[in-house]
Length: 378
Ligand SMILES: Cc1cc2nc3c(=O)[nH]c(=O)nc-3n(C[C@H](O)[C@H](O)[C@H](O)COP(=O)(O)O)c2cc1C
Ligand code: SF4
Image 1 (cartoon, protein in one colour):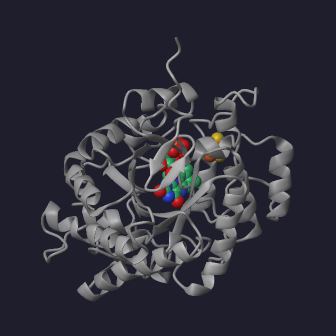
Image 2: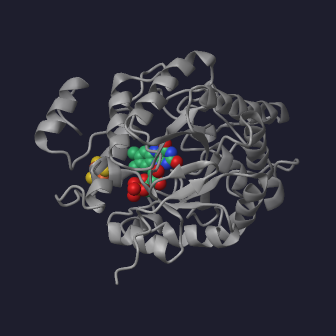
């Protein structure tokens, strides 16, 4: 007898019941308006993602403060005036039948403007960020808490804190980017203080009945960076603080283009071994594994072997928004895979252009490029 599909079995996150184990992992595509408001392009994109049948859509990283924007096109939740657009976005996702979470982020030393703040003045290319004062740190905790409150008022079902990709929360956790000698740095326990204070403040701000997930950096994949053994105690402490799930990822903007990340990245389910380690350390907390979960059989194996409770699809869902329906057999066409040797979407967003997928058919690409006023998708 075939084992029962776990991919299409329900799971609870807090009081919410997800009808399947498929989540859209947050994917910033540069579709927002330049003032951080929700655009028509964003609404259409998330309608398509929600229509996919994924149980949970985690909307891309959204700014908690003007000092922490990773791009001019990043969505924002740092002022009440953004709530109306965010409400429309949550409504659009709900209308297609998915639950809607929003990821909150401060980019720290990866912010796009030259004046940046970070735990320590560790340069990024030619830019050296300013070391945050204790007052800056206290303010930043509140920026996250207030933004989470706005996400709740916008009728989202939950919020996710971006503790991955080398952004501010993980900059504090990392021995590479946190060289402080005060209560926020010095040893691993002190480096955990800021992310834990943020998680605690956010949970207090939104209330225990509103799920707060955490995008969790399990390894920086850099010789002097955060390693999984040091990440585990942070996962355990976040679980104790009351996060609703841990969405495990590896790598930062500095490790994505170099080894060993480059070699791992082509393999299906490459982040799942890290999800498994974090899941073992945090019993009872749902864990999401992303990272080229391209084949439904690989997704099913990740769940069946207990490596994770849910899968996260980013480029995989961008390349084929029918992935969940095809995996379930509701649509018979083959899945259109994300090409492992392509990085067009990331390349475009890193150069300030809205993402295009090389796997879209010509007419879809041409129509999209025409809409954004471009002739070619370089
Ligand atoms: C263009 C692009 C944008 C991304 N934006 C985010 C983001 O906003 N927040 C986040 O936590 N991860 C982000 N990621 C990482 C993805 O969520 C995911 O972890 C990674 O791409 C691996 O999954 P995949 O193989 O399905 O793409 C992004 C990845 C890409 C390629
Ligand atoms: S095929 Fe290329 S553009 Fe499309 S999702 Fe994959 S990496 Fe991005």
